[in-house]
Image (cartoon, rainbow, N blue to C red; front, side, top):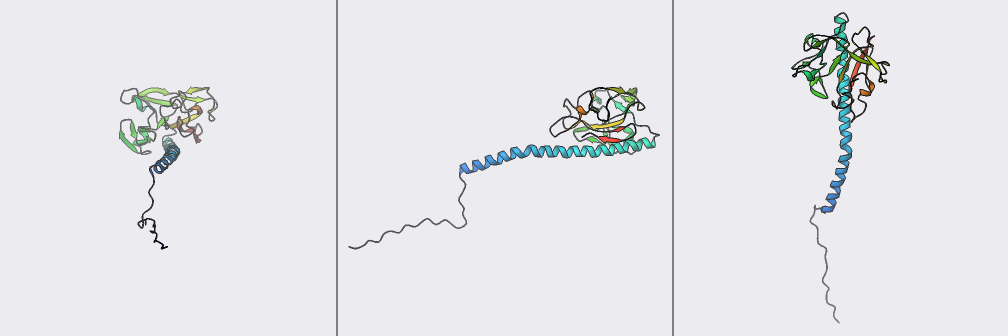
Length: 226
């Protein structure tokens, strides 16, 4: 019996350099995983960015505190008046930074309405940081009595909700206070009637509301909110 030759079977040869492609299912799985990772990382990145801005605010308020004390040293211990505006065009610029500090070179000058001092609040574009001190105030640019600053009875701990208003620096335990409205200017903490001195109004964590402040005691010791 003769043996017939059997046809040989060969595997297809893959062209060199070509790799197997992903299937649609595999691509969808990878995209889903990337989406989950992005969802986890983005809030952390946002909080890190917010904390970096808070650190910048603290640094700038420190510089402002130095400028205020330099001004006081050059003016027999006096501080600039507080500015309160009721005009429709400047009402949003209440307690703006003192023009005197800019005019006399203690702070850089600005050229926008309500921005005589170019110290823009990181969290409130178009507005300066806030400044207050018990004592003379200018109401719409004219003398308007004394500005009254609320201070808790347990200052500097500032944990209690009881306190009183002071209208002169001779009586007040707080010499001056400068502050930012914080990452959420419309938060209930920032808009609290006891801001910026009461601790319940202070910014404490990323994602929360409250003010970021720096203040000086009657003796000149400075400290910042957490």
